[in-house]
Amino acid sequence: MKRRSFLKNTIIASATGVAVSAGILSPSMALAAKHGDDPFKSKSVDEVLKMIGATAAEASDKIKIKAPEIAENGAVVPVTITSKIEGTTEIYSISSNNPTPLSAKYTFGEGAEASIKSRFKMGKSGDVVAIVKAGDKFYTAKAAVKVTKGGCGG
Picture 1 (tube, rainbow, N blue to C red):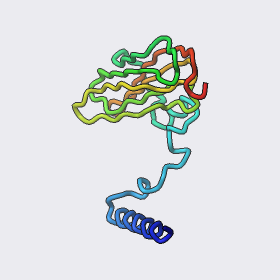
Picture 2: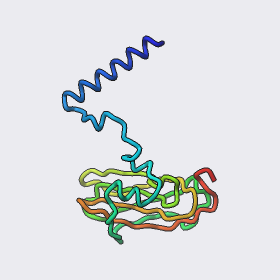
Picture 3: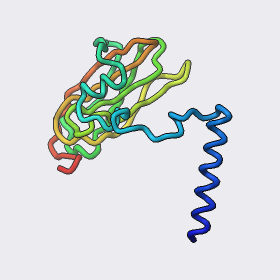
Picture 4: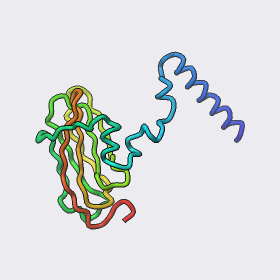
């Protein structure tokens, strides 16, 4: 088994080296992101906004968040986010009071309908914040959700 592992790891390292030297893969893509560079590991909403470049996001009524006012079980909170902002390319979902607030990032191609539907864990009551990127600008909306039974270890 040790020989097989050695051969497999050698082939993977060689293929990665060839891809980097051929310009197919950049070194930053080949190496894992550092803790400080990954917004999913952020511990606060402000840190997430800073990492994704959305600190100056402006409120928009063209972003609709459908979430329950009271979630009976924080382990499965259904959330729908829809953006009617022209040229939406990304939607970020943030649960403000979670230990790691960034729940998800969605990327949309040109002409795609900017709408997501998912279920998130919420550790305790707080806001579900939607950040939408359209062009070079960020927009935001939020909805309050009261959790009666915790989902993140509660």
